[in-house]
Image (tube, rainbow, N blue to C red; front, side, top):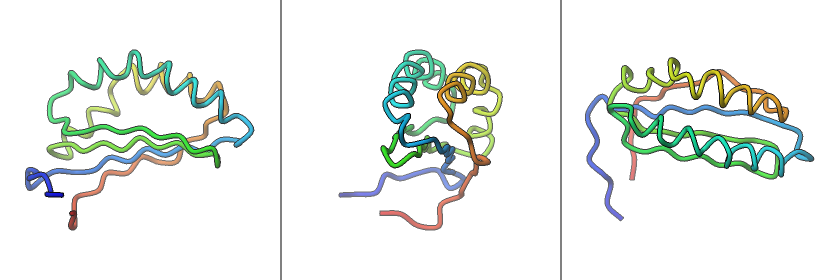
Length: 109
C-alpha cells in the first residue's frame, strides 16, 4: 500500500455523533437516506479529496473527510444540506453531535 501524496496544507475533518444503540437501524437508515442528497452536494465542493461515513451498532456515527486545506474543509460548516437538512434528520433519530474538529496531518501510511 502506498500513501497518496497530499497537499502540504491538507486536513482531516472529523464529525462524530452518539445515539442510543437500540436506535441503530433507524440511524443507519437515516444515514443511507441523507447520502442521496449529501453525496451530490459534497462532491461539488472544491478541495475534497475523500469522504467516508460509518455507523456503529455500539451507538456512534462518524463522518471523516480529507480536504486540500482548512479553508476547503470549512465549507462544510456552510453547506445547507449538511448543517440544516442532514443535521435535522440525524437529530430526529436521536443523534447528538460532538464539536467538529479539523486535524492537520502529522504522519500517515
